[in-house]
Amino acid sequence: MNKIYILLGTNLGDRFQQLDLARKQLETHVGAIIEVSSIYETAAWGVEDQPAFLNQVVLIASELQPLACLDLTQHIEQELGRIRIKKWGERVIDIDILYFNQEIIDLPSLQIPHPFIADRRFTLEPLVEIAPAYIHPVYKKNNVYLLNKCKDDLPVKKISDDEPYRY
Image (spheres, rainbow, N blue to C red):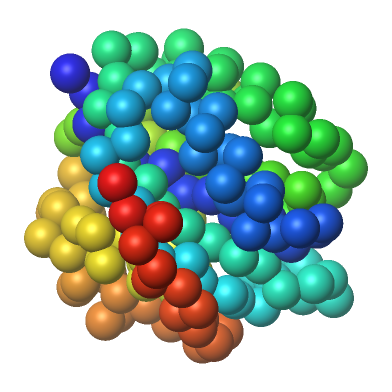
């Protein structure tokens, strides 16, 4: 069984509902959700003149291989209304594969581990919550170390750790 860490993000529409719908679609099409981080609100990264994001990390157990997982997550994004207009622009939902077991994949369509994990506090905060000791397969450092060394100074605020978000 593959263990896949996935980052969810949304900054348009009913953001809590978008996260909920994404989790349900992932559970239906990708695999069983084993663990879910709290929800965090963060300022937009990359293109900053847009609404704040809600972000959450989920751990999924899946039989899927990496490219099949990517295909399904992109299909879920489209089903939930994602339209790709510009890089790092606003979006109804964003589903990023962060880690896939301990695999290192470098293809034009898929890079695992996600190439910006160590640069984004909004990714590391929820990731550290559910996988503090997980070792990044390229950097050979755990997520806590990566968070402590992260130079991203955008604020990340935990806004929910309610039981409905726990599996």
